[in-house]
Image (cartoon, rainbow, N blue to C red; front, side, top):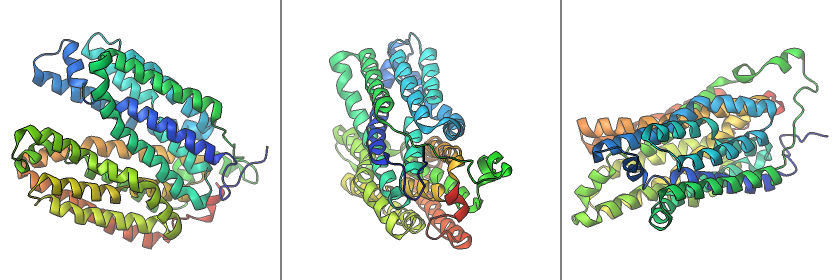
Length: 418
């Protein structure tokens, strides 16, 4: 079988994209639908009082991200070695089983353990990112990754809505069974429809080149390490306001009955902006280069965070978070694109696995840092400090790209041939 060159992409890359889009959307919906009822489920499992239920809910929710951060590089290396489709099949089948088992949990320890197991065996969305990044034509990488990111963001929006609607109708345990069935549909679609084009990584290479794997294959570490830092920073900035948002909105909304409603709009506004803009910003990155988009998006986010500290109404905060979502939309696809263009194909999954770990690390540390800063220095400080971090990130990336000569984001010739 002839192998497709990275510049031309795999023959089935468009079909793979749409299947991965469906699978990522489905799995993210299933993973996030428990957010509205997780404390209630913990109470059903015998945890009282309410404060203890909330604490255990946080532990159960965070367990998945912790486990995923630990194993993402491992699954990435396995994808490089045995194929990306196999990893997608493993993730979707494993998540379908674990999600169904969550509906059978008898105590909170089983719930936490199963959530941790979900992080270990999951990773469909990150696996899909690796497949699309490595099998899409270079000139369409930004658009394809942006489209995939839109599906992930849409799943994170729809999931809590589904989780709020289903339990009153069918019960919490049956909701988990429905989620497992949804992911099983993604497993079937992936198994039957995804066609992976293998790349011959040995032809024309010396023994030393064939033996080299992982970080040893990266020609220039600076842009890659900068992308790992930026991936974590992106989620840190997006999640830092999560612990304070309801209290902050309570200071802006005079009617206490509307506080939770406005808080929900604030939390969703950023994701909605990213859904609408991700593919468009990705297409822009294909045209002008991912590094320029990254620096610009970080700078715009830094600017938009400042007025969020001084808003006087909930509507103002919603609008600013939506605009911030538009800017954030370009970051994850562009980060993946830069890594893809600076890493050989045979190590792309492994390095992108570290990017996923950095992403999860930002999701964990962002709320922790935001809660600490908000409690000790005031809630306005959360926005201002995050703004300063984003600005530092923009300056750092500008310096890295100028110094590494990766201004086009296309990487070195050696990376292309990987």
